[in-house]
Length: 263
Length: 245
Image (cartoon, rainbow over all chains, first blue to last red):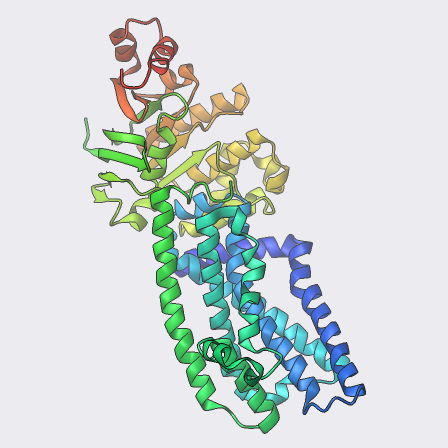
């Protein structure tokens, strides 16, 4: 891994974000809008007398953590789209940049995005709804790290599909993560799922993370089992998906798709 | 002649039933400009993409600087670059920003100095701070050439680098390339549809058709062998020959 090359690719995205209003909107506007909508829903539920222990923490906390997953995935997948749209993939992969360095730079990019979005949402939630997520304290950290890792996994999966199938698959950069939303149990406990779906959901790391988050908020305990399951599954899926990406990259080189992707 | 800096042996690329490059072998020597001629679809660009490691060959080997490209991609590509009419660079970055990113990808030192030098040499000072999306096609060609030359490669692949440029800048670029080739011992693989340019620039020419090498030698040798008046006539004769002849 060459840090100079990773930094080089990161600087390309920094230059882009510095200048692009649309990309800044992606960081500020949409998360803010999400928070406003879910904040009002939460207030409505409270006013309607719906008995839900810790409703604000339940929904707003879930929303902020969901955005961590979403932005982490986007950081990886959209970085690839940026290269595809600007027909820059040839410049990158005809340079000494390795596939590992490429992936590393998109993952760092996703961390930067997640940090910006999550910080902003926490500030908004505190200012508008008096919800201080930081009160959860350090027990929040393993959840966030696991969600970032889950986002990378979905992002690398999305990227490999876009690389293989080209522009027709680019919508996945925004849609893929939502395929996992129902079984990630972001806004409801896992027990509401039908039993057959529960078995599948337990194989999805975010389901453990959101269940764990609720355990922290409702019972005030750190759910070590959930954290360990989420971490183990994430590490397993991460190794599999990175190997899959390398395989897809080689298939694309054999089929000559790397020089045609985006056309 | 010196030892080859690029050695291509029995290189073949098939896409399903279609054979784009069919068992070609050639060398490029240090300081040599090798012209790659052929009609559209002859396999020129596929050959360059294989030399850059962007397309995996079906069979055959590519060695550069005595190293196998399949095994030493990183160290080989550090010393190689390319420019093509068919590539672009990120539109939302300025010319200078794009060059700086490339410089970092090649781990270059004194980045600002290098950028300023290449911009000066290719007469791009007026567009240095301009957004890439606002460049004309000729300015874009100069930018891709600048990114290729800035890294001071030992081997350069140029795929129709002067297409869409005005004659004045084409002339300056040719002079710059020849000068750079002389002083730095640069080896170049050059494709162009401009026969005069090919004759002027190339020490040796390979003519590709339907993925095969059908002629090889200096421009004069090829013209003599086919009994034509110039390279353009040879091109027309060979390009119009049906497949398999």
